[in-house]
Every structure is written in C-alpha cells, then in structure tokens.
Length: 496
Image (cartoon, rainbow, N blue to C red):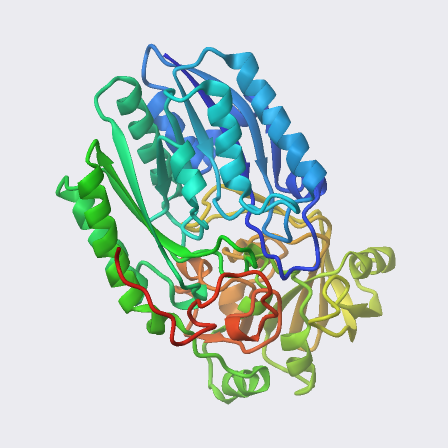
C-alpha cells in the first residue's frame, strides 16, 4: 500500500491589506519530502495524527510530498499559489502509482485570482490521480466549504473543536477513512448543506454556547454509528467572495439519503442559533478602567479585531493608546505588536537603553494610527517559542526578532512577524509571566481560550477596528452573496 501525503494550508482575509507571499509560507512551514517527517511526533497536528495510524500498518509506504503552511493573511499572491501547487502536483506525479492521497488543508484559502483555492487544489489532484483513487482531506472548522471541494474529494474531515484542540484527532480520522476506503471496507458518501450566514468566532466554541449544541449532536451521530463523520463550519467570516457560506458536512458509508437527511437536521439546529453568535464588546478605555478598578486578578483583553490567526496584521495600537491615556499605568500589562522597524531600533540601542519609537500601523494605516512609545529595552530575543497548551501543542512559532520595551507597568512585546497568539508561551519565551499581569492582550477571537482560561479571571472582548472585526456589518463588503446573516437580518433559509 502506497500513500502520498501533502500539506497546503492558508486562511484568507480579504480585508487584510497584506497579501500572503512566499515568505508567509517560509516563515511558518515550507518543507519538502522526508523533511516533513522530522520531529513530527513532537507536535499534535493532523500530520502526526495521520502518521500514528499509517506508520504501524506493515504494508504501508508513505511518500511525503510538500508541506506549505502560512499564517492567516490576505489572499495568496497568485504566482506563489501557482508555484506551490505545481510543486505539490509534480511531487505527487513522481510518486505515482499510489493507492491513496491524504491532504492537510485549511478550507479557507484564497489566491488573488483563485477564490476557491482549496477547491482548485482538490480539482488538480483529482485530475492527476483519476476519478476512482481515494483522496481524503482535513479541514479547519472555519473552512469555506464549497461544492467543488466535495465533488473532488472522497472524504473531508473537519475539526470538531473550537478552540482547535483536535488537530491530531482529525488526522487520525482522515487516515482511518482513507485506509478503510483503500481496503474496500467503506465507500464514503458526503452531503453538504450551505447556509446563508457568516458568524463572528468569539462565541463559537465547542465547550459552551450555540456551536456546542450542534457539534455535540454531530458527535452523537458518529458515536452511535449513524454517520462516519459530521463537521460544522461557522466559516472564516472575513472572506469577501461570491461563493461564501457557513455549512454542515456529513460523511456516511454508501448512504446518500442518510447523509443528506442528517446534514439537514444539523443545519437546521445551526441556523436556529445564529443570533446567539453575535459577540458583546467593550470599549478599550472602559475595559482598562474595569481592570484598574479590580483589586487584583488577570484580565485577558481579546483584541480579536487584530487577530493574527484571523488574517489581521497584528499592528493595532488601540489598546496601547488606551493604556497610555491612563499613564502612569502601574499594574503590569502585557501587550504585543508587529513592527519590524521598531524591533531594529531597539536592537540597535541595546538592552538597558531607553528609546522612543513610533510603533504600530505600519501595515494597516487604514485601521490604526502609530503611537510614540518611550520605553526601556528589557529583552532581545530570536523570537522562537513552542506551544505548550492544548492548541497546536508542540508547534514551533517564529516571531522573527523580538524585543520587550517597558514603560511603567506596560511591557510591550514588539516582533517582526505575525504568529499565532493561542499560547502564553509567546510572553513566557521573553521572560514575561502572564499570571503576574493585570492585563494581557491576546490577538485571537476564541482559540486562545484553551490555554488562557485557566489564567484569566475575566475575559473582555475589545471593541476596535481591524481586518478581523467581530462587527461584520461594519466591513466594506462588495462580492459576498446577499442576502446573508447578519448583514441582512431578514435572511431566510429552509432545508430543500
């Protein structure tokens, strides 16, 4: 048995002013061939999960193709997408014949001239391997699932957790479905139901709230054997494209009617809860005063409008400005911002030096304004850290060079590159302890909760501008299909 494995993943935000180039992949993951398998067991990812199933199979030979994964951001530059896709396909072609293909995808990838980039990856893969070869893919829970993706794949497996703590399990399930199909034990059938709604992710968790109800029902259908797999997709909501929707996907064993029926049941549950996803936000000055009025405890400021894992630029100054307006701010506040120029200035000055730098708004001046920050250079780092919490456990992050500037109680981490902000190791790797802070800024709408909830006494969602604003009605939509909730409150939907 011969199985080819590839990774091609990115999450697009069309409101981000920064397109994703080749350095976006190089800064996160760009590996080829056997390099993909080095140290993979240390990280709880889809690849390591799939390998845990495939490697023990004595007759199974694995061909690692290409691993290309970038941080969320603007659509991928078209030449970069074309180049990486051609390399993936050429490596697959060189590996033929194979008995199956497993692709680790995201599902919300866009290229500049290819809105359904994931569909294109699957289409080109299918064209190369033929109509009957099993092709199984994994998807993020925020995938924009299209009809094209379902047509071209044999089966698609989505995360069932938000925060995403089941990447490893998704890889296991995908590999099991692939093996079962190759061996003739199952014949996967998929049913997709798309819903005219886009949802902010702040209240989209599997632990509580409206999404939890629907995911629990899908898991129950899996556990009692009614379906092989069920996944709910609240979608990456900042994609201004014509083919955009939340969705439900059900996989059954050669049961087209059952798949459709169960998908419609789950979709109805999902649709009925749409109003509950709208998040309550707090103005930054009010949030700062709440933290100051507290006699202690730690306030996590969810700066979701500038979420780097939602495709924003990471250079918002909104919370920093609110803290500076209360100066001198005495309790410890841990903030972070992307600004390569400020990093270079701080490194040039050296540890212990006091400098004044203009920080922020280098990449998204349409959303933010720069701030003059006077502080002492406390720390200089290479910017590497590894996730220790449940989400992306064992995955290494690269901030580029990073520094800590201190002014009173404000400890500002300035980095060269955007990274995932799911894990407190971002701060700890620089000698800062989040548990000792009154305020912690986290640029993530929801996934941070898996690691930060045990630290936080209170989580506050900040009202702010940004490419990943939870106020979806405030964004300049041009292409999205209308009517769609919540942009159009009177949007209607019913099962066919």
